[in-house]
Amino acid sequence: VEAKREDWNYDPFKLTEHDGWLYGRGVIDMKGQDVAMAVALMRLKREGFQPERDLIVAFTADEEAGDDANGVSWLLATHRDLIDAQIVINPDGGEAGMKQDRKLYVAVQTSEKNFLTFGVETTDKGGHSSRPTADNPIYRLATALTRLSQYRFPVHLTETTKQYFERRAELESGQTQADMRAVGRGGADPAAVERLSAVVETNIMLRTTCTATQIEGGHAENALPQRARATLQCRVIPGESADSVQAELQAVLADPLVKFSTITPATPSPESPLAPFLLREVESVVHGLWPHVIVLPEMSPGASDSRYTRALGMPSYGIDAMFDDLDDGRAHGRDERIGVQAFEQDVEFTYRLMKVLARGSH
Image (tube, rainbow, N blue to C red; front, side):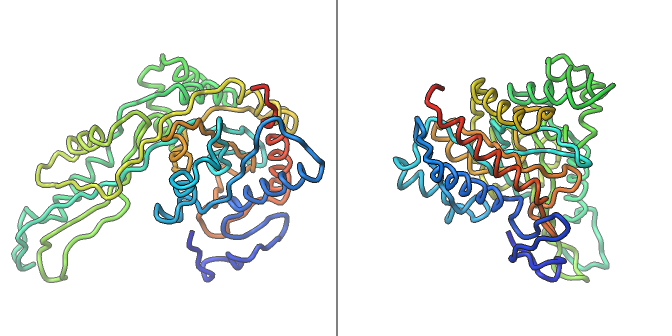
């Protein structure tokens, strides 16, 4: 991920330790996790540990590298026999959340929203700017996008998100706790859904989302625009099709002159089953380090390389215990950082998790 030196207080591509923090591009996403896996392997080797099942660790260029250079996609296409596994653990897909120095949860990512991008465009013959018309493509597109900004896709809960809300309620109190429990049971009333929808963190777990991320229009300051374009970036709940999302968007924009195209097609990523043994093992490791931290299943709103392994029928789970502040997430951002203690604890967590999953009794 690009980082410009002039934007940072530290050199983004040189690891810097300062006041209990490690700064640098990728320290939280996900060079820190890479190091934790490498150190865990070296420690197991040094101890003479003999696993009862194979432990295969692949260090690859990930989804930010693009499809042409994606390491997991390439391995599956050319050397699947080397990484074919009963279960896949992806530290890039997990999340360990904390707020105000209080560790809250370690998430086991069983699924992720599908990445899907549309282009929308409207055109007109244009003309001189001294003779404005109501068919101005910029106004037409802006009106359609305003409708989208006021729209929410229908609630679509999966087995993962139901359990997410049920377990996440343990961290809340009062009305929020009651609302989450009602959603987890599948019996929430519209008012409870509305309250949870008003918070970004919970809204994105309830439904598919589509938002405008780029807009462009016109060609000269003294000419009526002949064209206006926008990019709509969607994160789609597993099980929903690209066609159904496009049909919903077309109904919301409500303008037949706004034409659709697909910029980035969706890569289907089915939900991995909620494996009870895995949740138990993760809980045993988590509670051995942090007794009051809960473990919850999670659908990730972002994309990870687990979509490639899931698509080929390999159950895949994002698990990571490098605690990051939910209110100050800096992955991909300026002055990306992770606490020294949080990093050291994730190294220990990764070592312990590898060890328990190496047992052959599952």
